[in-house]
Length: 98
Image 1: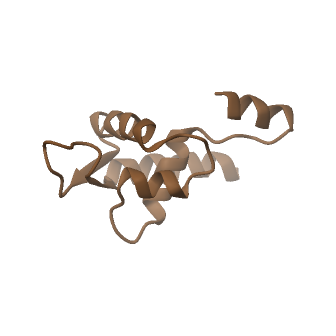
Image 2: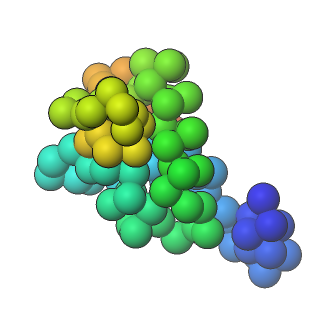
């Protein structure tokens, strides 16, 4: 939130964390861990914040997790977009470029 406020004051449109996650997952050649996603982002979010957001995206059907250990879920899983997630991203990108 603080990051978005500072960016808006500078006249820079901040992406939502979900938007950035969708884009990073869409551009990935393989499913990514939340730690890998945290390293790719331009925000101050931590890997734990990503875990929370990714679980919410999973509940909404936008992302899925593969190859995980139930004892460490969702920290050690590898995440990827579902077809619904790709469709949502495509729709959002269409709105940005229009």
